[in-house]
Length: 241
Image 1 (tube, rainbow, N blue to C red):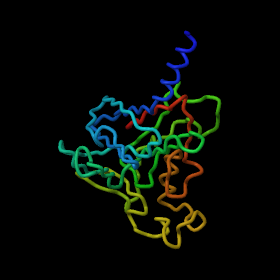
Image 2 (image 1 turned 120 degrees about the vertical axis):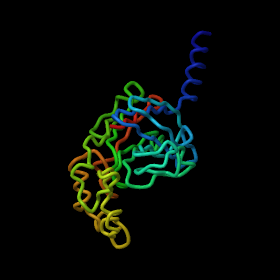
Image 3 (image 1 turned 135 degrees about the vertical axis):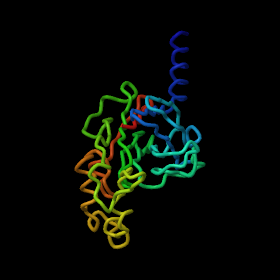
Image 4 (image 1 turned 30 degrees about the vertical axis):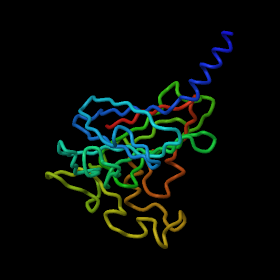
């Protein structure tokens, strides 16, 4: 009877398992965090303010596909100079570039999660994605398996001139080369919409050289996509600074 009850409890626990996220602000200044779910599930209303040292937790549904980012230089109503989404809680909108993005596609093929730290939309602050120890299967290995994905350099320092975004006399974000120039060969579009016709370019190489774990442009998949398989569901920490 005890074995039977244990089986029931275990089954319920597995079936009810979900992905936990922890968002932490390690910056010395406030960050207005934001989240957007492509499948209609938006955590914590979509946006919230985080003072230095703050930590927030939330849960997402299975097969969640979305992004988390930080907004900076904001008013108390959530109007921001970087990563702005039109208000404190974003109201179902994603952020305006430039912004560093933590991107997730959960419970995909083979029940694996896919995640990356993306600079395709530019950079506004350092971020790290960290799978939480003890929540994932350790029988798999590889450079991009359940590893930290981060950008640990402040790319606002040394950002190429045409890519700089200014506010209050300082560089507060670094635009992607695509956004800064509108060139098709930097945006990987039209005649340049394949990996063969859109190889890496100077603006992308600036990002990649300083943040080698992050997506630097649209076709940077092979050196920037991480996977993780949960036990039963991987939890993730997303850290600002």
